[in-house]
Image (cartoon, rainbow over all chains, first blue to last red; front, side, top):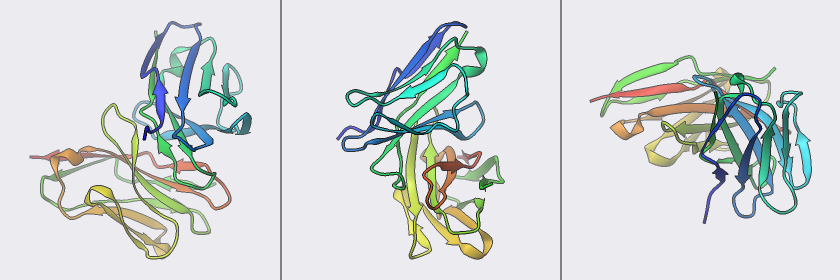
Length: 113
Length: 113
């Protein structure tokens, strides 16, 4: 019974490149959340998606960041034209429903050089 | 705005000693309350949760937490810590009718041999 899977676990990008982070929710879960954790800080909500729908993207930066959760395949968090300040750990979580407990993946650690 | 406060950034305890990690939230109604643990370089694991009912909840790894409405607190306890408990602990809340996890900044637990 696989948990939430994220890949890659580590990603290095140069400034100006694109970063694509993938998240496969737990089996049976159709709700996906993305969080960002900056060094020495707690997690900050970014976006909440259900299949083919963005429910809440209030935590997403207005530019360069986008997320999707297609009918088939993993959820993708995409960061265009990365900058050094995007360096962080990005965690994905999934749940059965909006108010159920969220189960977290191992995270993707993005380093922008 | 809702917020979660973990007043202790670091706590150091001796192996075998008891532990209490503090968590306070600000919200008028009773939220859903969670404690997560994050080991170095790892994702987050749910330790325990409180939705309603008995205010003393038992979790995994010998942890428990007590919800005190009058103090808006949900402190995490363990009677005897083990070296493997060294990690960062996060308190989080979900506000009723919402789904976003609001996170505390975390408490880093250091175990002295």
